[in-house]
Length: 279
Image (cartoon, rainbow, N blue to C red):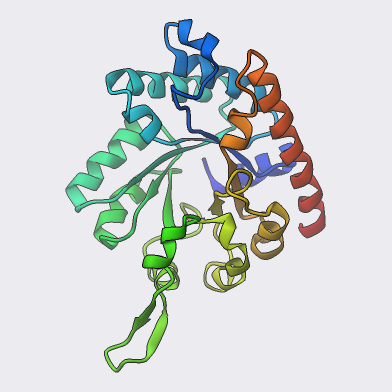
């Protein structure tokens, strides 16, 4: 998917909502456990219920890998279902991969070619040669971890990096943003920036004004959608705001899909107002 196509879908749906498919077998409604593939059945109903309001779906790999082969089958069925029934949806493999070049090449092939996701989250710690294999696919995206929403982000991401002379060269996440700009363009590289760090979006926009940002942490983690839009929105929206638990686990009963739709609609309505305000 191109950046133009993504922006057009945002305008059409009046939404920049990403629904996280963090589908935990221990949390899905009990009646689904009777299904042949409970995780896929759960995902399918969530997708059908929320696709009118979402521009992106983001399965987190951990929730599938924990089920072994069965989980990978559920994941493959899920991405195939999205691609077949709502091809306008931007798909994210939340895999946080990143390794030596040859290994990254195989990760890229697995998620961007075999499974045919539009994008994949990548950890930048090992540097350029661990990221560039993911950038070799036309109309596919790398979503680079920059400033995450967890409390442990302060351990490294907020640390000042010192020059050889001892002077400050900026915080680690700012150096990631600055350095990675030479690896690609805003047409196929996004960044993960946590909603719980919304006040830092102004600093981030000074470095990557045109890039899309994937913003987790709205909803269950307490991030403010209005603050994210205030500090982070650019002329092409430039935001994909993720909500996982607040939508997919809105109910544990047989009405779970209906309740998920209601929560997705609430966020979409807020986003519509913010898009009118800032675009």
